[in-house]
Image (cartoon, rainbow, N blue to C red; front, side, top):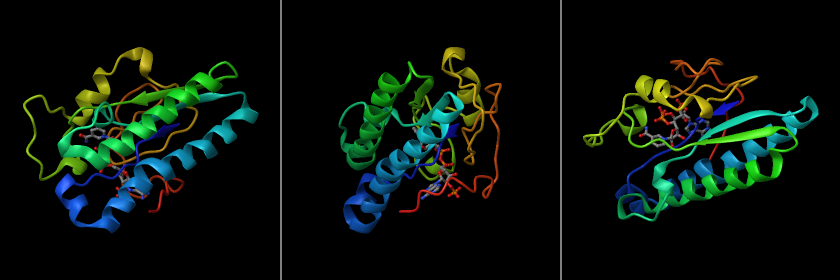
Length: 166
Ligand SMILES: NC(=O)c1ccc[n+]([C@@H]2O[C@H](COP(=O)([O-])OP(=O)(O)OC[C@H]3O[C@@H](n4cnc5c(N)ncnc54)[C@H](OP(=O)(O)O)[C@@H]3O)[C@@H](O)[C@H]2O)c1
């Protein structure tokens, strides 16, 4: 299962709008974790599987431009690490994907850095060992992979179970 849902807003926008900040924290951390817990419980009776979840390099350390978004992703990354430690032996493999800047609808309107990636290239070039052999998948608009690890542009509405309402 691949979970790509996420919300981004600039640090300035988040500092100016407490409701937006609360929603981002809810979607990027709490509701993603709750969703993964549902997925984990669903995998156990089937003997395991692979859970691939998109976090971000923004969670690697505290930085001025991404104080809040980075904090949510840091929490998510740590949860996924713990999940993998605890449930890998019984059969649930957890893969945490931490992209850098990728040109998607999430980053529309932002100045791309020189090393910015394209969604298809980033998905294609990920190390093969990290590619999930997913029994099922959730698709977001970009950065979704098929079972062979190929990028799948997916349309809005493709993911009826991907509801992380904030
Ligand atoms: N692009 C980057 O530079 C970058 C870098 C690091 C990490 N990431 C992470 O990679 C993942 C994919 O991002 P992306 O760049 O492909 O962004 P995107 O095109 O904006 O995709 C984000 C997806 O999340 C869904 N979503 C947002 N809020 C939701 C909610 N409350 N409930 C259910 N679904 C929700 C969106 O659904 P709708 O289309 O219906 O709105 C969209 O399909 C995200 O987790 C993001 O944080 C991206």
